[in-house]
Length: 520
Image 1 (cartoon, rainbow, N blue to C red):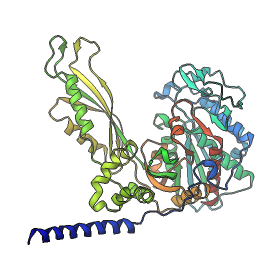
Image 2 (image 1 turned 90 degrees about the horizontal axis):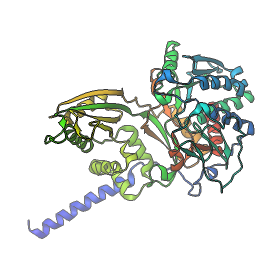
Image 3 (image 1 turned 120 degrees about the horizontal axis):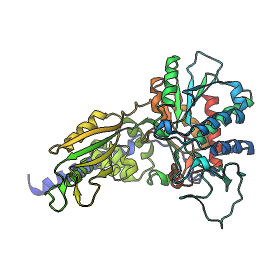
């Protein structure tokens, strides 16, 4: 065969490959949901315009004013605000307490049982929690703003109010309302969802509504520090009662604005967590030669620790797509650029390139691999002393499908050749994966579609931990979504300064839960 003929054969083969790639891209079953480009803000999404009463806002603000801060050492928790919160809810929602059976589990776990028409139907369960994280530099016990008038006039010329070392537009436990927002710790995480659930139930009870099947609510009091005394104990109670749930709804995903998740997708996404990552925190104790800094060895323990850090950071656990993330890409791929669509549709050829692209973005990287975060390192306590032991703390967030044992083997491999003691500090296996072909997932999608038309509703893996994990013993259908439309800035206020929620957003959350309870 002469060179000219060989070149034509090569060109023909390339053209066939290109044709195959283009055909597969064109034929790939990407989601093709309709979308109105003008519907870009929460207020423009839908003809559904939920209205809030001043009484509803005051009930919510009153709950924000109660500083239910949980602490890592459970016994050191100031439980007085938790007692106040428990007493506040019956005062705020007497109709709910009259219509439902209520009980407490482990003194502060709050459980509500709303009996339905048909006891043969499997019940559904809504979760939230009422503990909040501390405010940096702030003592919630001496919060001076509690008791102030909550409605504040807008004053653009006024600078932020400084509360101790923390700058907030309004004090963190004031529950202040201004410019259409309610400010305070817990407005987004998670008292907003708790009060939305109670407002939804209260309104339905007022209309004489009775659900088809039993509805349960479970509100934990220590989710921010692990949920061992709250959600875990409530789940055990349900298990002892022989209860299993057709669907469990908790926090975990949001309705993300285009700029806050994947900038390549130009429309909002409701990301429903059908699973969540596990975690493993290890403390590595690297042993070597100590002594005086005037005569250092060639490789001190801190140098060897740095080498191990470099190995762990460079040789991370491999990236791969698990089924929920394959479905996620199928749902959003049709809204991405042409190159991305080609890669998703032709993973038989371009999977490695697709994974490398996803790994470049911290948000998408966390969805395709077990991540490695070097969080702490310690050597000597003195500038002129070489410690014989250096310590490194590493936090792994484990992708479903992998295990704690897999991660431990990975760590041991990276530490090979060094004298290292590996201590497990905290550990939890990843959750199971909830199915998508269920009534629960269907209702979530339909309700979001009514409230936020054109929003992509897609499965997702929650990268943080939630109370939902504890309820796997009573349901394999757990869906994590807080139905609020939040931008990148608002997301960053969670656990941070100036946490707040748009009141229109909260009104839509109430409407969402009313609709789910009515139509499930």
